[in-house]
Amino acid sequence: MPDKLEKYRSKRDASRTPEPVPGAAPEPGDGAAFVIQEHHARSLHWDLRLERDGVLVSWAVPKGLPADPSTNHLAVHTEDHPMEYLDFHGEIPKGEYGGGTMTVWDRGTYETEKWSDREVKVVLRGSRASGRFVLFQTDGKNWMIHRMDPPTRDPLPSLDPMLPVERTRLPRDADGHAFEFAWGGERVLVPIDGGRTEVARRYPWLRPLAASFGSRAAVLDGEVVTLAGAEVLVCYDLLYDDGHSLVALPYTARRAALEALGLAAARWQTAPSWPGQAKPVRQAAREQGLPGVVAKRLDSPYEPGESKSWIFVPA
Image (cartoon, rainbow, N blue to C red):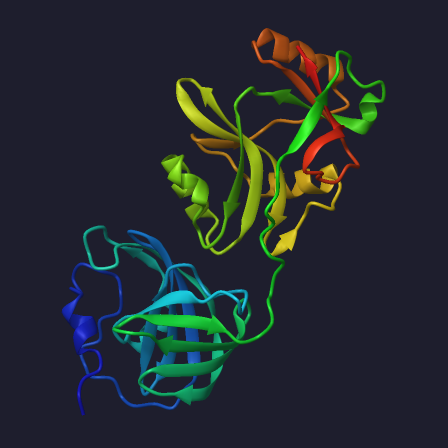
């Protein structure tokens, strides 16, 4: 019987990588375990591995498992992996094959509905990944993965940004508003899906931000501003998070969800917000040379286009 791990061993040096590199050929088995690993290598992807005849048959899925049956994702068929990979996580050294950080994203068991050289149809039963999927080979060596169940999340919204109306005076009911700086930067909505964002085409420095979200889809609202000589994304709203649209929720709920993300790095940050603090925030904006302040009603949903729920007041 051919050694199914021969190709796997040929790509790895056991003295240089913490990955399991068994010396013996695998023993046939009849288990039905699976694991999905989030792999921050040269490019972020997810590794789907299905136990089959004593090894883990593997595919690298750049955008993760599809959440909607209307969209298929690329799945690159890679070499079989040893069973010890069901629990493997850690740092593969830079310069080694697959170098980067690997974590276990999900594990569980699966049922086989069909298995052939060109098509694999399974039902995954994990804590994060569940449902019916089919992997199928296209022309050449490429494979795709298709979700056969209904969508598991709301579609990513396509929105215009919410815009403030301009007034000369601060709102009288200060306690009903949160006050934020008006940054005077370039407004940008940042959709993130599969660890990637199309906005990175214009701002390549946002790629690490998108990768940090892993498989968590989101839409951020903010501005690109120049601080200390560098472009920085200042985020002040969250319109979509982890499969759910937030636009109908009040500002307070969206703000809490945004702050829970903990966005704080050299090139992106969460904008400060001060409920009820109208005059001090306006004074601070004036002292820092900012255009003014934006007063946002605490109970307002996200309303694309100009809205009286957001008021810009010059400093």
